[in-house]
Length: 111
Image 1 (cartoon, rainbow, N blue to C red):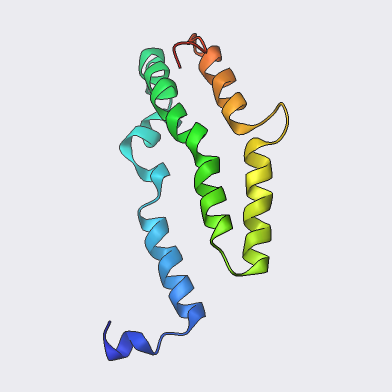
Image 2 (tube, rainbow, N blue to C red):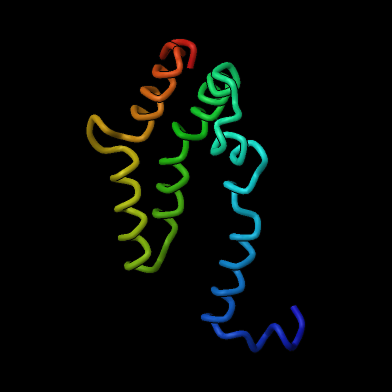
């Protein structure tokens, strides 16, 4: 870190970080651009549904790990809200992803 960077306020740092993240948004990736434009075949989407499910299934554990190591109450509460949305009830995200896969003709067993 340089001396100039050491004087960044937390607000400036946050704005710079957000700008950097937005430059590399997942939705700008050629795969997601093609998907948004309707250019992906059903077969490609089927394979994607099968592969990406591993991330969808594991994501709540990532949130839980961060939550359990966070000292800030407000941030923990935000993470808890996200965790509840991810996992609670019949409309949890892994279940919704499995339904998405099924809509593409992929069975739960294949996922």
